[in-house]
Length: 329
Image (cartoon, rainbow, N blue to C red; front, side, top):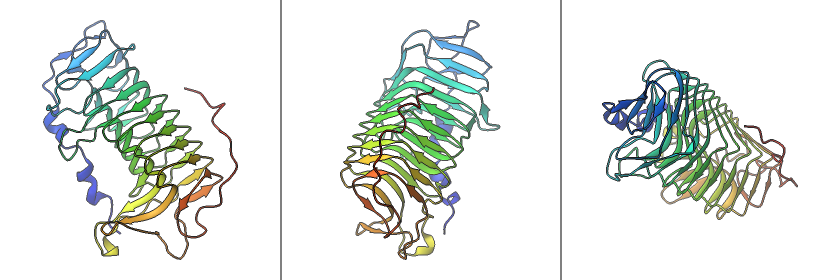
């Protein structure tokens, strides 16, 4: 099987190198942020003091131990042709950033709403990310929240809707928690994992997207629990790899060792649960192991339809909402 490293640089948003700004301003001594292209490069508690309409990027965080409170304000990107990476971008090209919190505001009409690159032990909460757009380049994802090369972050109580690609995109990241988010009306997946591992996807409300949760290429060891996924145009939960070469030796490994349990997945257009390879053309669907072995564990899910090797996914389970009492922040 081909390693995911072969596609790593296809996934790295290389345009960030070009887009990294000559910073227009820094947060002032009172830690108030009031302009676009502001860089936060020192630890501290920062607050946005007004709405921002930015021709390019919004706020850059390049220091650990930063708390950024948007205080209910919005960051909107106004130039549709500008190569932008997000309303709020936390990143490091060297040692990971740690202990960063981004909370309480709206981000829209940008390339990505909130972007975490090489960030660990951090949190994004109470963010409404909507209408973020693709701009025509190969890395233009139009995603509400992006986590790339991150670990042990918590993404919780966010609303991700109407983005031109994904609600939440996760690449080459480990040990994160994604819970109590609401995602609807995203043009692609609500949640998209590529080489996302050992993470918890729990108690999210996902509806009326193109797809619900899609796990691809080396997305192993995750737990998907207590999610409510309904009314998506295509599928509910996908464990799959897309194959673009007829030689099986060139196929990417399908996700494995994930546990999918206690989810309510119903009324999705093409089906609710999938454990497959997708092979275009001619748009064939095949099982990772036609003999019936199942790379992932499916337990006590309520669903209507499924597509997997015989015996892979157990019969539907009568289940009520398991997250009603789990509303911690």
